Each structure stands twice: as C-alpha cells, then as structure tokens.
Length: 381
Image (cartoon, rainbow, N blue to C red; front, side, top):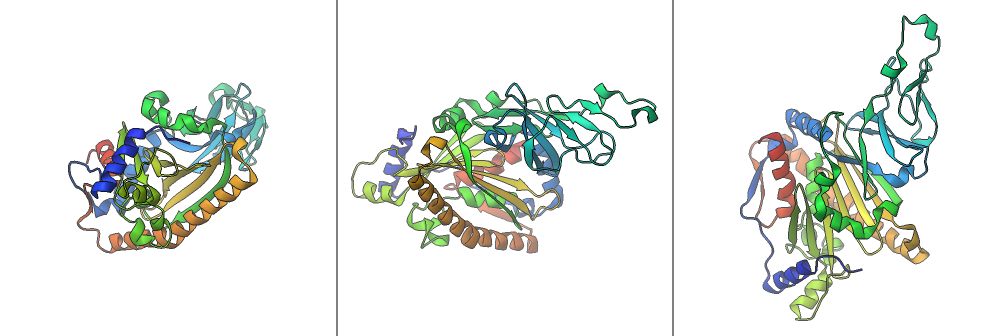
C-alpha cells in the first residue's frame, strides 16, 4: 500500500542523504513540575473532559442494541448502539441514589436496571422506565429522571465523547480535512479489534506519549530491536490543526537513499504516527493499524493507563497476516515493556525527586513539542 504522502518520502530521502532532519523554529522548555504537580494534573484532567476524546471503537458495539461500559477519567459510562444504528452515551449512574445501572462490560439489552433499588432505564433514550414502589414517593417525574446523556460522535470507527456534557465542538471541525484524508484509506469504520491490551503504569501520561512519538531514541534505547528497523533523528512532521503526524524512514529507506537508489512512499520504506490531540495515536502498518489511548490517572499525576488496540479489516485476516500481526505485537511489547516504560518510570521518579527546572525539547523534536504546545495554549501557560 502506498501512503498519501509522496512529498514526505522525497523530503525524508533528502534528509537521509544530507544527514539532516526537519526542525521547528525554536527549542521548547517544559517545567518538570508539569509531570508531578497534582494541581497541574487536575487541570489537565478537566481539560480532557471538554475535548473530543476517543473512548472506544465502533466494532465494540457493532450490533444494534449492543452496549459497552467503560470508566474514563473516573467517569462511568454506558455507550449503546441504538435501533437506528446511531450511537448514544449515558452516565452509568442511577438517578435515584447513584448506583451503577449496568455492571457488565458489554452485551445486548433493551433496559438497564440498578440492582440497588430496581430503577430501570431505556436503552434508546435513557428515559426512566420503572420505579418500584412508586406510590411510596411523593412524586417521581420519569421524564426528568432519565440517565444523564453523554454526546458521542462516531467517525472513522472511533467513538469520540464529550465527557463534560457542556462542550460545544463539531467533529468535522475538530478533525479537519487533513486528518480525514489520512484516516480514510484505512477504512477503520469497517475494522475489528484484533488485539486489545491495557497497562497501568507509574508514569505521567505525557511522558508515555512523548516516548511513543519520540524520534531520537531508537538506536540508543532499542539497539537490538526497533533501533535496527527505524532510523534515528530523521523525521518529517506535519501539523493538522490541533493534531499532527510524524513520518519516519525505515532503515531500508536509509540504506537505499544513502546509496543513491530510488524509494517510494510505501510502508516498506516509511511509517507514520498520527497524533490525535490530546491523548490518542494512530500508527500505520501494512496489515493493521496500531491505536493508542493514554489516560491520566483520575487520582494522581504520577500514574496513567495506556490502552493499545490493533485494528484489522476482516477481509485482511488470513492466517499469514495474523501471524505477521502477532509478530508485530511481540516486537512492540518487547520494546515498550522492557525498554520504553522502565526508562519512563525512572524519568517519573527523577521528576518527583527534583521537580525544579525544565525538560528540554530540541528543534529536532517537533513531534514531542506538539502535545506540550497545545496543552500550554489550552491551559494558558
């Protein structure tokens, strides 16, 4: 498969031959306290509730009438596929005394019922359907005691949520035509989840994202693995409004470029990491799409939860392809669990031990600068 960015491939070849890389106008210094401050962490969590954040994939509720439950930033949710095929979200909180109205992680139901006192709610619109011993209340207005709704927008198979209940965003405007153009060829609205892994780590969420999109560390931190597959310190960054995409050459592109041979904009020679601000990444491969979400912990700055899913279109799932995808996971798991995350744990520990000063993001670290610049703009730094 050829990527949409032949101009990027040409730029990468020129950088490889010249020993250069694309750079931002300036360095960026980020206060170390931003990774350990509980006050800062609370502001970031609140910000994420007001931005369109991806809470799942449409294939998780593929059938009409199906649902999933999920807790995001400490907020309990139910997401349903209604009878007309549209998606709706609710707070998984009973309007009587606050119990969960659904405990199962997923399933198919017409009615959700709180097991504390038996109040029940309809799947289609969250309305209060049943109140046991209704005569013993002064008056319960059923049309005013439905589940609180959570707006969900489905695009490219991803489920974007407004966790605040008050944010005013349009998903078309939020993503923009450039992100649409990058995601459309993968047909992710028809993809399935092949692999789904979750890791809770003693690392601030921004450090995890930094490490996943960093272009300077492969040959140093992964000398016998990823560092042999991906070039270090050569990349091209493209900004798409609030989002951005980092393109990196594979070592086979570097070898051919430095030898004066021709290369093309295919997965064989280059890869990309599309960062969907604030906390998601879409990493393209020939057989599947690697999809990350990294969530701040709802209680402490020094912890986060990373969820990694591999998305595959069903027509691609041959035995041979599945074997290649499993091998891709083995390489990723080895690099992340044994090299990236242990390093990031020490960074977190060091930041807590000495929170004064700043971390430096060089001009050649545009991909890592992006998240911190966008957060600074949103939080008024």
